[in-house]
Amino acid sequence: MTLNRRHVLGLTALTALAASALAACSADKPAFKGIDITGATYARELNLPDASGKLRSLAEFKGKVTIVFFGFAQCPDVCPTTLAEIAEVKRKLGADGSNVQGVFVTLDPERDTPEVLAAYMANFGPDFVALRGTAEQTTATAKEFKVYFAKVPGKTEGSYTIDHTAGSFVFDPQGRVRLFVRHGGGIEALQADVKALVAGA
Image 1: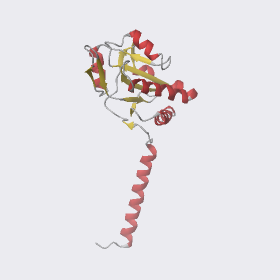
Image 2: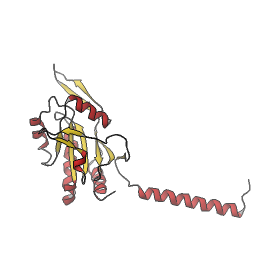
Image 3: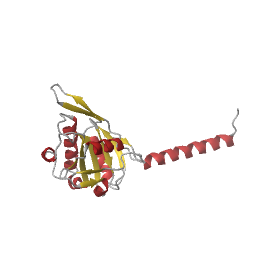
Image 4: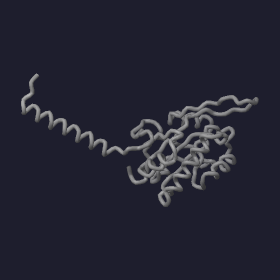
C-alpha cells in the first residue's frame, strides 16, 4: 500500500499523540521499587487484638504509611531482619519517621504469648504494634492477605518452625494497600517507597 503525504502526516500525528499519552500515564504512576498492588481486592481488612488484648484495625493507622508484616517471634532471620529494616527506615526518615507505623502479625499465637511479643517488639521500637489473634483469626487474616504459612516439624519431638510468605504490605496514609515488598530488597529501596508515600504518591 502506498502512503501519500496526508496519510504520513496523519500517522505521525497519531504516533506522537500515543507517545504523549503513554508518557502522561508513566508520569502519573510512581516508580516504586516494591511491587505495586494498588487497587488490590485483598489485604483490605485487618482486625486483630494486640498483645494487651485490645482490638486493633487498619483504620486507626490512617494518616500514616503502615507496613504490615506476618511472622513469628522464634523466626531466626527473615522476621527480625524485616522488622529491623522498618525501624531503620523510620530512623533515616527523621521527623517523617513518625508518619510510619510498623505492624507485626504473629502466625504463631500458640508460642507468641503477650509477654513474648512485648519483649520481642521492644527490640524494634516503642511504637511498633504486635497483633495476636486466635488460631482461627490468624488463618482468616492470612487468607485475607493471601499470606501462606504452615508448621514444619523441627529436629526434636514437639518442636516446629513456620514456613511463611516473606514480604511486607505497605499502606498509604489513606489506608489503601499500595505495595508488596519482598524480603531482601534492602533498606534503601524500602525507604524510597515509604518516603514517596509519605509525600503523597
